[in-house]
Image 1: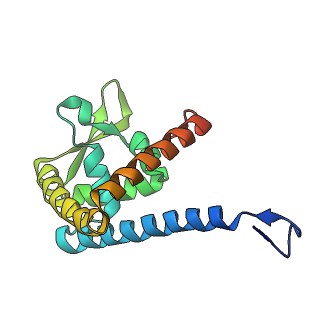
Image 2 (image 1 turned 120 degrees about the vertical axis):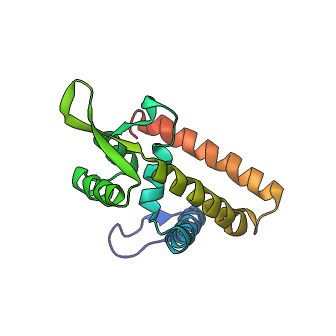
Amino acid sequence: MTEQSGRGEGTVVPDDVVHEFGALLGAATMLERIAGRELERRCGIRHAMFEVLLRLSGEGAECARSMGGLADELILTSGGMTRLVDRMQEAGLVRRRAAPGDRRRHLVELTPEGRAKLDEALGVHAETLRRHFAGPLTEEQRGLLVDALRTLRASAREELGDLP
């Protein structure tokens, strides 16, 4: 542990925990950049588009999602979600339709072209993750990492309650 100077002078910061958390965030950020780069280069879509396609990938009417719900899940503003869906609609990947009983609200659903793009992107994404996430780790290391991450996620969910 070390003392920090400046604001909060005399505050003791546990360096190991700070550095370990920084290592987690740094690795996640770099892996996300690699995955996004490959999706864009090989499939022509941005990572955010891939996330929308994934969320719309269920079967039947239940896979149509509200714009607001998608925005909340992806942590986007309503304007950002609208612009993203506009681009996806122009590319033929999704379509909008009025929500039953509320013409002001719109639902978004995959088109056949969107499903085909998702299938292509899933293959690229899985290949990228096998190479850059699974590849450098042994099966045992990956199992321990995933177990630890699930524990952290459960703890964070408990702390945050119903927040997304």
